[in-house]
Image 1 (cartoon, rainbow, N blue to C red):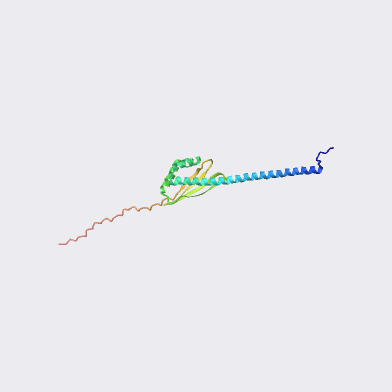
Image 2: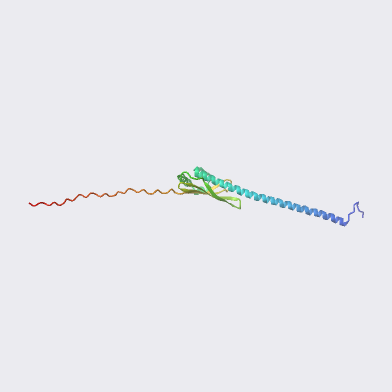
Length: 200
């Protein structure tokens, strides 16, 4: 058996094969690390997207509720409710009910304070299907009044699911006393005094 110009012993062949196997293992480890880094980056991106989407929807819900409060209470915008009430809410609050609510709002007069909006937004699955409950409060001469709103966003647009106006009635004026006819004593005619006749 002839040997080539570079004879290789068995030990040398094993060493070369082991070196190749070691390089292959380190390459696999590097690929696993890169894959883990990609997965972590994707998870971080998804988490950031969920947090930013939630914050954006909360801000949009608050802005929508604030806009509704200003346009309903201060501008008496009846068309806004026609456009933003949900289909179910349009059945619950027919046009006659809405017009009566606007009459009650107008009857309060000019508000004495700015609108103070409070409320919260809730989500299903952390950032899906937002629902908001808000209360707009302001002061009138008769006392505080509130516009309560339940809103949601099932699609692209926000909508009003429930709306209610709570106000303080003006105080009832005290009843004015009606002049009663008091009987005046009728003068009694004087009774004639008995006259005594002189005897003749």
